[in-house]
Length: 232
Length: 232
DNA sequence: CCCTTTGTTTGCGCTTGCGCAAACTGCCTT
DNA sequence: AAGGCAGTTTGCGCAAGCGCAAACAAAGGG
Image (cartoon, rainbow over all chains, first blue to last red; front, side):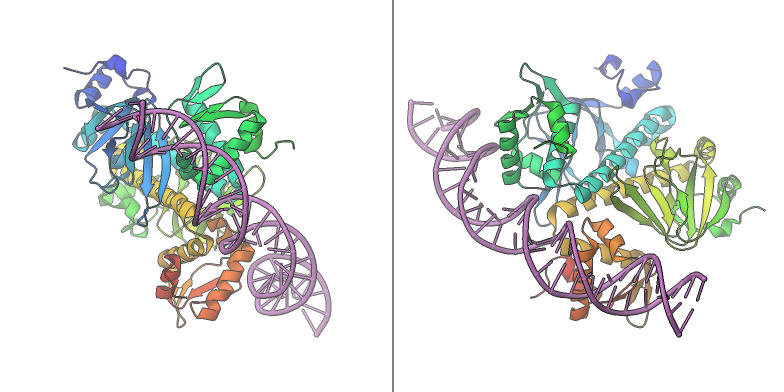
């Protein structure tokens, strides 16, 4: 059964495409489900497909030869990922793990050239995604070079909340399970340091957190921490 | 006077283009000279052109609102740079400074769509460049998260030597002027730490260095330092 | 319902690498 | 030749944040 264009209309990846073009792009896609903690693709594996996340959250992880893990990014609903083909890479440079149950569209890489000519705007949007990620990553390098750990962690939590926040009666909660270890791997620190800082913030009334759960109760105060302008 | 295709034949950016296509691409380019320490473009400035470095070396620097500087990368001969247009950015995200006297080709951004249709391979090569830089930058994040300062600095020097090394009778020398401060800004450390480590390496006979000058005399030993496998 | 697994907290000591200061050196300008 | 500037070296002290260890708590499975 064919995929319905209403699934993806409004997504930035499909911006600027006519309805017919959307259908043409969807014609080569298939949809699949990935349960929590399963891998969509794996680092160094030959890249055969590219993906779009319809629902859920995906964690993209790089592992070093020594076994250290670093979280490259979280993918949010509506984003393209695994687009090695658009970067001329033959293998995936990282592993993509479903942080919650996910629904994913996938295209065989073989479809890429055809899509490029049929719907150039789709390709252009993919390239824009890559450009945005390059900027993000550069910013992260700058942050790691110039800010100290507390500011980096505060900044990372702020970004998670902005991109994947869900309003609750207590504040804004990151709407997928995330551990202290995960936050450490995003910021180049350790789970111990993250835990200590989050406990301190909880005492100050900035966040409330539990097992695999973070709720920001005072985003403004957290922003001040991120900018190192907290009074006291 | 028109640019000669022999200037750029063999450059990766022009791989896969016919001679006529190369001429067509060059037809919209112009060549200019940038003396040492002059800026090719400036951070947050509106991006009006993109560039290719014909000769020299260019330092790409990001400055934070607080005034801290981080070197994003060095551009080597034959590389594209300032390709904001291909990433859908309206401003340059960094400043490009000539590390030595440079010769640069530049195209107005307005020429981009035309080049895309006239010589799609040229566009594809640009996208590949961006993809490669994204991978580089991700690797840098991983390195900053998992390795300590000495290993990072050794790794950075190794890369500079591999990409821009010039053989001398003493070893391989980085063939443009580079200060301890520059190396610090590439690695997220300080000029003091860089200076101390380089002095130590000099005592071990791994490098020889002087004012704005670094020569690696024992690349293998430096590699071991980068991998933290130096004995004793 | 108990037990195992997984995630979190916290104390303690210590190392890495930074900050500050001061002196030094080579190079370029006048 | 003298002077100044830009880059480098080095000593000293310190603090941020890590490593280790141990205890605790919340899920989840059998």
